[in-house]
Length: 287
Image (cartoon, rainbow, N blue to C red; front, side, top):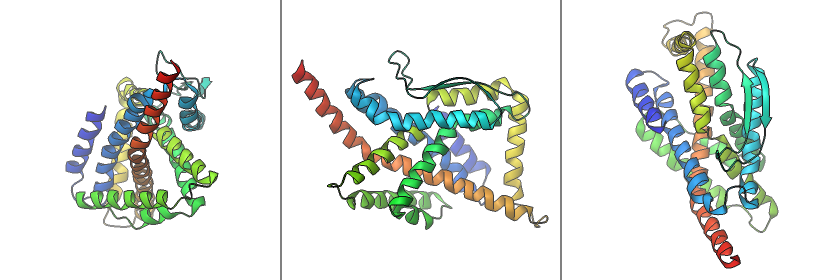
């Protein structure tokens, strides 16, 4: 899956040469692959020391997981799907699943788009919550992102450095004697974990593309139109400006959330590792 995302990133970079959305469209799959890798590393390797299903594991995972599943749930309702089952948080050590939403898709030419929206809804839901937490705390991170302009690989690297520095400053500026600061860190960490699409989400989206080839062709055609509108030499009654502005805003939102999520997950790796080691030592003493 990660290799597919990296290949998609490279393919989009070549295909969209000279296009104003080239950098965003190319870097988003790359960031998504990094988010998935960091999320898996935290969940399966670092936090594995907390024992799957233990109190501390549930405490860390519950908010993000519940928002993750609720995002699936509301996206399924929004796309006209029929909900057949819902489990907001029920860790299953046998399957590795923390929660689930079962639904029956409405099959038409939009079926692939529907599946995609449902599969990646947690990214939107958790992403919005991360931005809201930052906004209510002062919006320092949003202010840093507002000045970013990504048009080339160097801009991408520079943006990641700027945002990572801002996040470090954000964390350093927290009053750790206050319970509210710990709640803020806890919320952002949990929502960052919940924002990452699971392997099951990816598989569902890919399966629908294979199962419904007509829907896949229709979706590719629809997305191509959005990119082509940017290249129109005339306004077309304001359509070009409307589509260009809307799509750029959407790409910036996705890029911002991915940068937030990846940076926070990377910064939380050593913290989660130390915490899991300490819990492992406690369990050894108890034994």
